Amino acid sequence: MPTGKGHRINGVVKALEETAAAFTTFSSPGIENAVNLSFTKYDGVVYELEHNPYDIKDLQLSLQFMLHRQQIHDATTVAPAVAPMVRIPPNGGENAQWFAKQVLDLGAYGVVWPQVTTMQDAYNAVAACRYPTKKNSSWYEPRGLRGDAATNAARYWGLSRDEYYERCDVWPLNPNGELVVVTMCESMEALGNLKEVLAEVPGISVVLVGEADLTHDMGIPQQYDNKEFKDSLREIGEICKNAGVVAGHPHVFKQNVGNLLDLGYRFLMTRPSWFYEGLDEGYRLTNRA
Image (cartoon, rainbow, N blue to C red):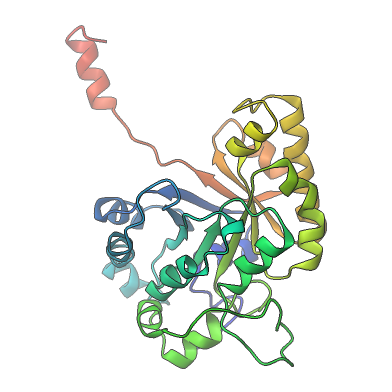
């Protein structure tokens, strides 16, 4: 099977290589959510397990129901059109590698790590998502720590085991890699360390701003119009751009998407919309508006 640009099976990587931005969203696991998301235009979805119960079987079902047979029939790949990724529960400093191992072994295309603050946090986040490779490899570091149990993931990706081994490395460290490692910047300490972290730890695909936690740490909880926070948002974008790493934002709306693109943010998470036009019109007609 061909690899590399133009033959991507991870829609997020494909969008980041070929377009100005990748568009994703958070979702709780669940069959109904998975089916609904499989029809959307999103490049990827991040299943939210940091603030939801960690139920690996529920996640497994969600990944399976992302597969849409008509889409697969019409496409050039058997991968889901919307690439499933997972935000795992532990903070980066906990070094809880087994969470990454479990979700990757199911076939997830990326891992989002909360509260990545130090170089050690970042190194662990990348290493936990990689298999070990030869020391003379161009991308040996961070040395992989993922244990080998690739059967289910290879089957989910529609690849042989050997093909999976070739492609399940982190992007863009390995140009043929299809896995996305997202580290979250959620404190002033993390922001202060960010330039050094990106210079010293290869393999981070995206730095995602944790704006709620960041503003709490700044003493201005959820005051997103505060100048201090806006300056920090701009600084994160600049650091990432200079390091050649994608900057991401978790709360993208019609009102801020243009500004975020201008600031260089390219991993953009928008909320799915629920529409109640019929209900609203019914309330109006029955004088309940």
